Image (cartoon, rainbow, N blue to C red; front, side, top):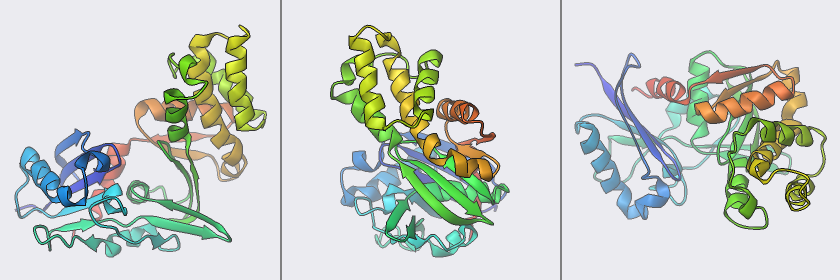
Length: 297
């Protein structure tokens, strides 16, 4: 019988799972909102995984590999970070066995990575699995960008992380939308092309982000800018701030490869074009399945 593996991307808010065989074929998949925060505590992860297996029809003999916040201090079981000097191709050799007796010998957790440069420290959990998949698909060198709540810019050299830079882009956007002086104005479409381009243009000028964000409010209250574009302008400012910080280095490396959902990847590809950066987009589901194939024993 062909070997199978259940690979679970267990994030903070969402959970995605893929049942694959050794050839990398996806036999079943499932996505829900039962992320780490919704599970309700460490003691409930075992039951949550058992329910997932039942929902997907995964037998008790199928091994499970999980990545993401499931391995954080607030997850099922905290797993130490790997040093960034460990090549991604060796990540499968460092999986941590789940200690819960109900899953002993069957279930493992992917560790995150920690990057240190002088006094600077950066970390990731979950993105390393996407990066492993990218490497498996032949993307071993250059800048890889993983947009999201915490957007990651990672420089790879022969499958080894040379640099990790995290931008709290998605989190800041959510916070500005939910409360504060800008929130009442952020009711429009973040994908509004004119507003988004205006935000990118302002970001490219290099003014402090806190200043340009306030100017969004000032423009609306002074009736110098349309309120319906404020959401897209803020999005352009935040994403543009990433590109302003990293564009020069990325240009020297030949551009960027973005791993993200279609809508978000399109927004980053547009920003890359604005900053004259060549951009390749990879589908995150395909990348994750490519990574999962590396976890077969």
